[in-house]
Length: 86
Image (tube, rainbow, N blue to C red; front, side, top):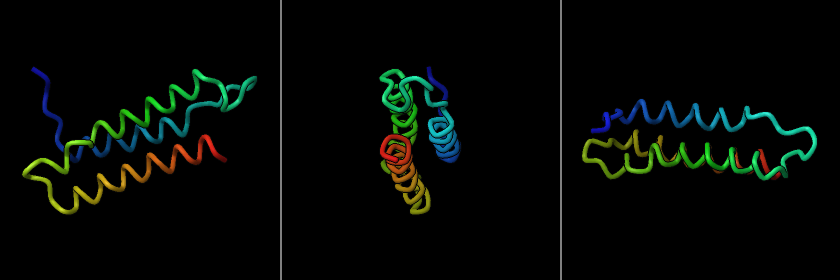
C-alpha cells in the first residue's frame, strides 16, 4: 500500500517540482521549442498539480491549506507562462 504523504509535505514537494521545471536547462540548438524539453517541463508542472489536487477535498483541509493549493496552481500556471511565452 502506498505511504500517505501529509498535505504540508505535498505542498513543499509541489513547489520543488515547479522550481525544478524553471531550472531545467533550455536546449541550445532548438531552444524552448524542443518537444522533449516542452514535455519535460509540462510533466513536472503536471506532477506538481497532481500532488495537491485532492487536498481541498480532504476533511482536514483548513482554509490556509486550500489557499496554498490555489497558490500552487497559480505558480504552476505562471511558470508555464514564464518558460514558454517569454
